[in-house]
Image (cartoon, rainbow over the protein chains, first blue to last red):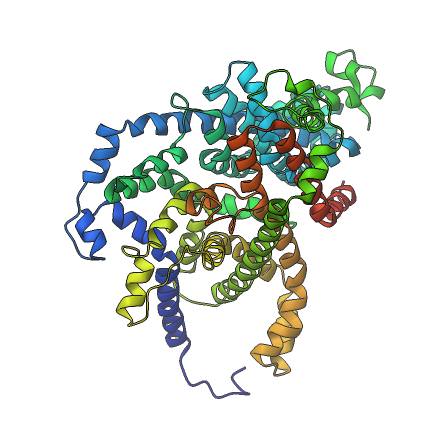
Length: 278
Length: 304
């Protein structure tokens, strides 16, 4: 490039300018999130006066934990999202293995997975609600675990299929010749090779299960209500409880945000693997 | 090498590869049958009855296609279809344009790139119900931040959630949340491009615009299409954000197909009508997603 156009700025200056530009972009774009976090640690007067500089307070957190029993919602969310994540990976991994390494044709199964992935949740809501109500499972964590497992299964199988495809066929063939059973090959050879893929899948499933709202809203009342439902109560006919709503928003979103930032590598990998070929 | 051909007597081997494969998929098949097929068939049967929750015995009144014809003739249904189309198309267009710009900017050389990429994906994972309730606060007419910013710039305040503005405001919220998804997919596309092609174009003195229009865009197009298709299907099913921002209102200005189904089901408890709406919705979603389905199925078969 240099011989065609005289370089006016040094490479370092350009990099610094772009970094400054990105600081501005990130601030503007993330403003709603920053505002949300600030609302949680501010007195309502400071929020309403749009102050960026203020004395932080934990009043909002005090309100939600000591006056509304917010911890129960968080506990329910954890006790639903974690088992669902483990179950999805446990059920999806063998199927993905069968579809790739065992060269099962399984076209019907594949079509079923793809179609199931597209079906909107709302279409299943009424029959599932009625069934759960007959079975006496309304307002239990169990019904949410079963549903979240099922809803995330098609995507998980699809994602893990991509990861299993990368394992060379020779690994399994050599083990079979050595006298291993199919089950042993899967458990002691494939699973250790697939740790990364299973973590990537788990990240997606956990985020989806933690964030789910529609089925939690319809199927739970008070005992099994999850964290995303709790925000509704802080904005009622008596007005907006600014500090409480901000604190609740921070508490609910922090686990998934922290998880996504820490597990970013897996998230990006899974996203590209699950949508376009990685 | 087929395991069944080996004369070793072990349990796994007697089952054969095919038997083992069936065992491996059995749990997934059971879950899919139990939570997808079962409820879908149950809903199909219910949609041909005049079942209303508050009227015991009405679940056995067969009414044929009455529920379907009623729904397809109602004004509310077509409003919901229209709102869904406007919502999905506008938010995809917005997310795609913004996501592409950010991906191109992120692909440049600057300091702390990894850090910026990491924080830019935050909106994508924030709990949608939290986003819905928080944007409602941001959009408040008197105490909201957006109006405060407008006022401090000397501009008039905007009624963000009024009859005319509610749908655009809802689209803005969705674009905000889904932009990182487009950005990441397009970034993956940019990373897979052939460096030599870029270098050759640079040597030929290509302008940045020509570079984007004739080299990057054709390469990125498949990535854009796939991201848009996935997002389209997800947008049709969006519930939490919309429910907490507007609840489908004012009137039915922001009532999408999903909100419409939910409202019908949980306000009137008219099971027959709701399941009919749900089935019409499923057919629409599958029709819209059929090109994507076909594409995914073909890639799955090709790389087996």
